[in-house]
Amino acid sequence: MNARRRFLRVLAMSGLTLGLDACVSSRYLRGTSPGRVVVIGGGYGGVTAARYLKLMDPWLSVTLVEPRDTYLSCPGSNEVIAGIAELSMLERPYAAVCGRLGIDKVNAAAIRLDRMRRRVILADGTEIPYDRMILSPGINFRWNAIPGYDEAASHTIPHAWKAGPQTDLLARQLRTMPDGGLVVVTAPANPYRCPPGPYERASLIAWYLKCHKPRSKILVLDAKTRFSKQPAFERAWRDLYPGMIDWVSSEKQGRLERVDIRNRSVETEFDSFKADVLNVIPPQKAGALAEQSGLTDESGWCPVDPLSFVSSLDPAIHIIGDACQAAPMPKSAFSANSQAKVCAAAVVSILAGERPPEPLLINHCYSFVAAEEAISISGVYAYSAAEKQLTSRSGGETPPASDRRREAVYAKAWQRNFRAGVFGG
Amino acid sequence: MIPPSLTRRPAPLLPALLMQAIFAVSCPATAKDADPSLAALSCLGCHTGDEDGSELYALDRIGARMIAAELRAYRAGTRQGTVMNRIAGGLDDGEIEGIARFLGEPQ
View (cartoon, each protein chain N blue to C red):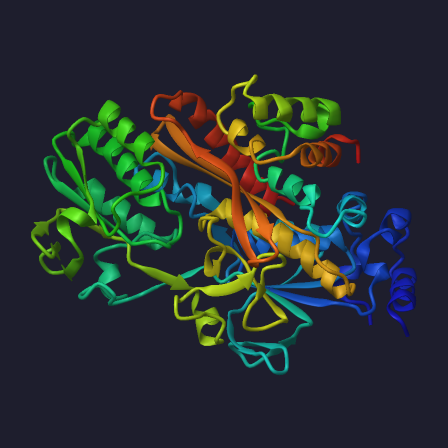
C-alpha cells in the first residue's frame, strides 16, 4: 500500500476529518514512505524539533527520548545564582507540549545507537527504530582538562553550567561566604555553551555582592583574550560595580594549571589565587551519546551540513544545538531553537524525497548585567552551498552607551515567550 | 494498528499552513535563494505570544504590510530599535517580503 493510501486509511479509521483540506496540502502526502523520526534530548533544541515536526506534519510518528519529566532551563540560571529568580521558575514539564501535539515521549535514557540497524537502544534494552533521527544531546565536560577538576571535584567546586543542583550549590556558597571575600570564576576557551554566560554570571554575582557583601571582589580568569559583548559588559561593570570585577585575559595569566579543591584555589602559569567561592566552568565537548556513537570529530563536536543539520558522519542522523558545529552561530538556546526549525523542515522534505529548503537562521541572546539591566547580541546566518557552512549576514551587539533598562524589559519578555514557544501546550 | 498519536486530534490549521507556506515560498524559488519562511520561524523565537503586554507583540496582529515596512525602516536605520536593526540588516527585499507574508497574513 502506498503512503497516500495508507495515510487516508489511517485517517478514516482515526476519525480525523477536521482540517483535512489543510492537511492534504501538507508535505507528507506527497512523500513515498511514512516516516518514523526519533528525537533524542529534551532541551530547547530537541523539544523545538519534535514540536515543529508535528506542526509541519501531524501524521508523522515523532518520538522524544528524554528521561526527565521536566526540563530546567539554563537561560535564567545565572539569575537564580544571584537570588533574583527561583530554580523552580526555570522548570517546564514535557507533558503539555507532548500531549497537545501528539509527540510520543519515552521516559528513558538512550544509552546507545545501533547506526547500522537504525535503532536507539534504551537502558532496559528496548530498541526504538527510526528512519531519521534528530540528536540534540547538549554538552559534556572535558573532565581533567584542567588538572584537579573532575566530576567528583564539581560536587564541592561547582561548574553550574547545567541548571539544577549545581546552580543551587553555587548560590548557597555565595550566600555563606564572608563579606570581603573573593569569588573566582574561570572561563573556558571557545567554543563552549553560551559564550557570554560567564560574564553575565560575573555581573549578576557582583549585583548580589553589591547588595549583600559590598566589600567582596570577583576575579574572572579567562582562557581567552577577549569575549562576547565585551565593550558593553566592561562599560556596565564600570558603571555599576566600579573596582569590583577584575577580568584577567589569558595573555596576562596564561593557562589554568591546576585546581586545588582542598584549598579552594587555582594556579595559573604565573600565579595562584585562593578563593572563598570558586566556580570552574570547564572546557566542553558534544554530549556523551554523540561521542560514544562516533558522531564527533577530533574537535569533540559534531560536524554537520547546516542545510539540514545532517551529520557529516551518518546520513540518517541530524544533530542540532550546542553539540553541533554550526559556526559562526554561537552555542545558545536561541541558536538551538532556530536550528531545530530548519532541521524539522529538512527532515520532512527528505522523507518526501525532496531537497531541503535553503535556510536562513537567527541567533539572539540577552545577558543580564543587573537585576533590571541587560545587553544583547544578535546575528543572521545564511547557507553557503559551496562550503556547506553558515556565513554571517549581519549582526551586532548592544553598544557600550545604551539603554540597558529597556533591554532588560525585552529580555524578561523574551524568556517568557521563548519558554512558552517551546514548552507551551 | 493506529499509532497512539493519531487517536488525538492534531493541532488544526497551523501545521499544514506552516508547511504550505514554507513550500509555497520555497518550491518555486531558485536553489540558491534562502527560504524566508525558515527565517520567519526563527522570528517566533521572540515573537510568540501576545500575553506579555510588552513590545514583543504577536506579529500576526499588525499585518504583512506593516511588518515589511517596519523591517525596511529598521534596515535603513530610520527606525531605531535595539535588536531589530541588527537583524533587519541581514535581510534582502525578497526575504523581508517573504517573512512579512508568512508572519503577517491571517492563517
